[in-house]
Length: 138
Image (cartoon, rainbow, N blue to C red; front, side, top):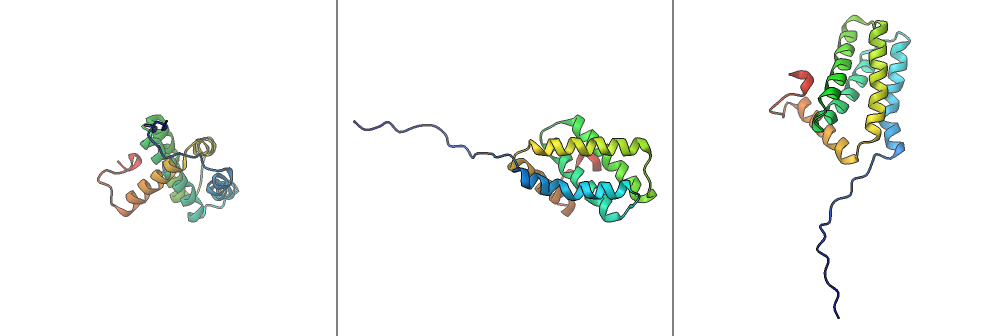
């Protein structure tokens, strides 16, 4: 007797970001944050954090999580103002620090596919290929 062929649909498996890749993604912005806290407001350091919040904001936008989009956008706006003023208040430090901790946890539970889609989304926005801007640019 012949075996019956399975009719199950094969789905692509989505994997979480491995710990070493998650560390690679977070370590440079964390080091830059530490340098900013010590008073070193280099443009490169601030842009590193802004870029990380861009990716996290894109993931939140893709997943339709408006509260996270707002949170990450607020952190980005604060960093952009620090880029001009070269200073941060205690409240701003607290906001960025807690948002950075949240991004760390949030990216740790995202699949590689989601992170890749967010990076491509941000890159399209940077290249001007999107018909609609990112939420914090609207």
